[in-house]
Length: 196
Image 1 (cartoon, rainbow, N blue to C red):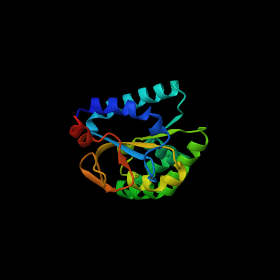
Image 2: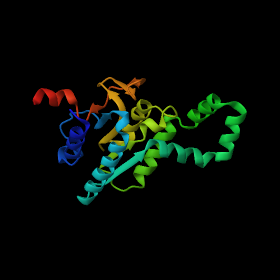
Image 3: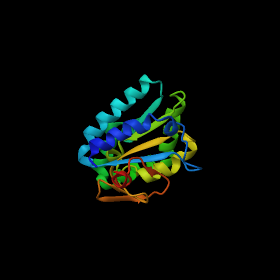
Image 4: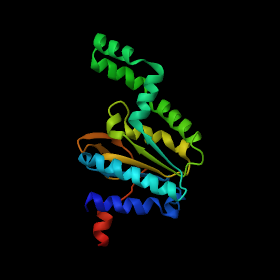
């Protein structure tokens, strides 16, 4: 199935009341992953903007969090750009990456997401974007593992530039991001191929 077809199905799915109310999942958490070819990033971003606008028109409060932008905000609150550049010049890029990863532990990112949720009113749906841009500073499976207490029953759609096979995340189809078993593929190609 072409990405454009999957994006059309995505638009329909996220407007569905059962989806927004997390019905039909039993006791499972309403976490979804929409995986896509990384080279289609711009098309996916445009579609996310359109979906968010359309959902706003029907009074669905969608919180869009760009993981990379959030990481930059967290870092800028603690360090100046000059300090970061100085550290990198003195210690090298690998040491800088280690330092930044410590500053962006999953617990810290989780708290920042919680603050955004609390300041956004009655959030009915969350889109998590910027996963590819944030790697390797943060790993998406670590963030997802920490978000259930924050979101409760609010559906979360993670837009993932790579592959998800119900068990493993593969960023850009090249890097294993880790095992993650608690999310559902949002639009599963295989299911739709069988139904056609």
